[in-house]
View 1: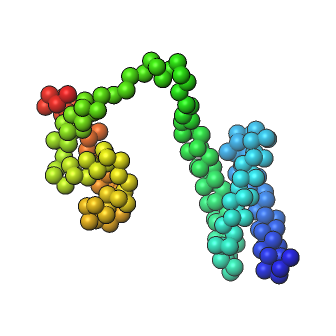
View 2 (view 1 turned 135 degrees about the vertical axis):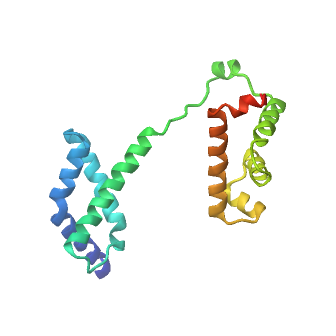
View 3 (view 1 turned 30 degrees about the horizontal axis):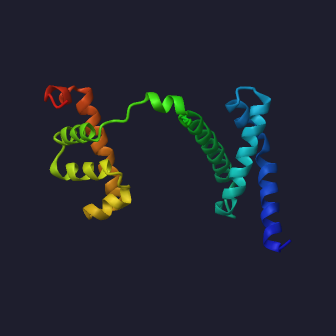
Length: 176
């Protein structure tokens, strides 16, 4: 084993030794007293700490080191909670696929066109790109804007259309 690798293992072992009680307490609190769930969370925290250990400063004081450990443990908890909320999509079986109707492309295009009337010309162009399944990078390239601007523009368009539908502006214009 190389000397650098051995130092990394030693650094990780000493970090865990110093913060084991804190990590256990955080995991037990998150697991609501479930010992098995706590063990799983602890393992995920250790993996995260091992993964990000090279980014921890060598000269970090105890307060910053503790804050770093807490931050990464809470990040693990947050990611696990987010993954639990996501839906798992199951493939359709043959019987179910036969009963579902495929949307008519002309009706879909009419709906997109009517929604686009609620937007400015620049937003309309971006909205049509979104409807054609362009990624944010492709939209940015096509519109001549930065990637971050394209992401924000997509978000603003979606929010604007949501608000219009919630406020019933969409139906008021008899666009459907």
